[in-house]
Figure 1 (tube, rainbow, N blue to C red):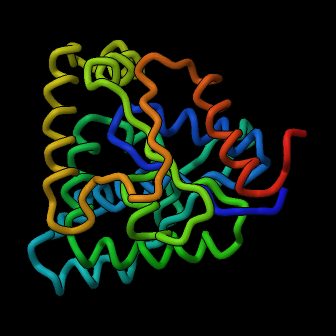
Figure 2 (figure 1 turned 90 degrees about the vertical axis):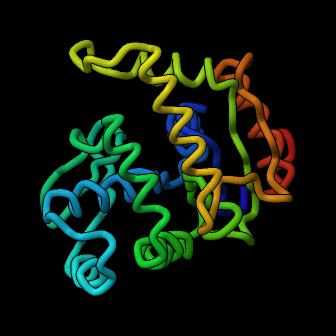
Amino acid sequence: MEPIVITIDGPAGAGKTTISRRLSDLLSYRYVDTGALYRGVALCAEKACVDLTNEKELSSFLQSLTLSLVRDAAGGLTLVADGEDITSLIRTPAMSMAASKVAALPLVRAWLLEVQRQLGREKAVVFEGRDMGTVVFPEADVKFFLTADISVRARRRYAELPENSGQSLEDVLEDMKKRDDQDAGRDLAPLVAASDAIYIDASAFSIDEVLGQMMVHIRAKSGAGSD
């Protein structure tokens, strides 16, 4: 198959991470979790006590920040900030909400936009996010918008939490509703499906079934036929 750029957008808990990783493995493509980058910025800004309302302070912070995604020995992605592995620190409900807030800041989006587009120049990449097909890569070869019923998404996210998280399923559902509202309602790059995106509701589909649907479209686009 000819190498292409694939984007997978959608709300929290839709299965984007699992699907994106599996798809990148199937294709031997690089996988980029852009949500992790926003979580990383949010975490580092919080640790540095950055005033997000102060553009000069925020700009100075971003200029000094180094973020990178590194594939580990197990095939997963490690997020490294200024030489420190922060992967385990960003997968919390609090960081999910914080990421949504920093994603609404023009300075942060502009800074990460260039980081993401630099990665996309290589082709053979699967990008997971919320505005990959609409803002970052509007000319992507294949765009997917992956979603599911919010109750299904909340159960999936709840199952991913550690036992000592202290969150109930109801808490997760409420947080997810707030995150959906934040993502869809922000003025800058709101969460919407690209007009040419392939829409997949994964509520009643298994991971393999979703991957099967995606591969049909990818093969058609890349001219790989049915082999």
